[in-house]
Image 1: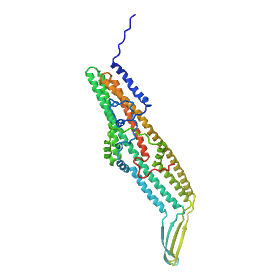
Image 2: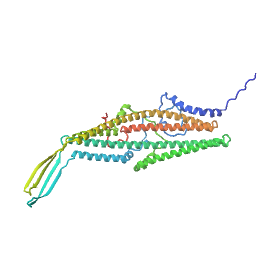
Image 3: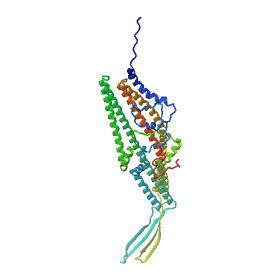
Image 4: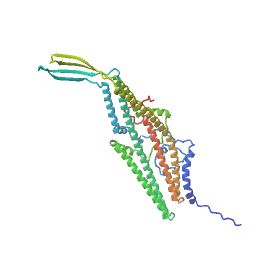
Length: 482
């Protein structure tokens, strides 16, 4: 019998080039699951700051993947958001806020009108010529002064109507302020996201150029095919295209700030320039209190809900006022005249009372239906505001966990890409697995960026919704929410 020949073991470079593309995505997927049950270790400030930074896949994961950054109790850096004075000035100048402010000032005058009564003095005068059949002629005149008087209870209802209208207008101004603040916060975070993506693509470009240089050196040494050189050039061109798209997105975000806040455009751009894109944001904060307390505080600070409640109260008062109009106001007056060729003088009092008919009855019924509709709208807004508060609270709590998982995956993918890049530089790995590992690392880092920014967006929206960030000067929180 002939002894079978033993096969030689494949070279190390073949094992790396074959196994690396299989292990890289497997490592990126399994490592977050394996580390979820491990206790979180405290992280340094540098590790916390690098969560949002766009590090190079070839060097981002030098630290062990199991070193999970813990939640830092410190507040975010002041540079993370523009200065309060700058923001308050920008919100004050928003057209929607100014429109709501003028509406509030108009409501003050409307309240004064209702308090002063719609009835005013009326003067009537007459002059006539009288001519008898006998040919006698003479001039006669008459003069009267009259005014309608509000019946008891109507003046109090008018005063309450004016106050309710002023409360509604004040709440509308606060709601306009809150909408403008949320818009400014979203635009600012969009700018931070665009700058982070641009920085990530710049570092992606550096890695692509490094890979191209390595392939060209190997090609000149006869260790790489022309196909690898073309693949590296195509990858570099695609990275340059993605970088151009990221720069366009950043320029668009800057234009949005400049367009919507022209008076503060230079200050906002300067504030953004003082927030380096490669420093990023610290890890998101864990919610400091129970969700129930946060929910109630958000509902009590919801200006739109306060405006809807004031509108419902005003609709009730208006229905009562229209119902009271079914008892018309009487009109009293005094009158004097000279008649019979001015030989007679007349002095007297006048009284006129309209009769209430079907028109006033239908008007009262219409007002009551409008009041019922206002309460239905209030109930709808309460449910929507309650649901939005619960979703935002849940998003803020879950955002921390999502960022932790995404950050672990990004670190693992970056370490895999670093190893693949090193193996390719030493000639132990092919180009295509290296490019694939680098793309996976970039995608993982982009997901970590988005998760971190989403978590901070929810955190700042929670603070804004509770009146802790950029509060409205028009109205505060109403603790008697029901």
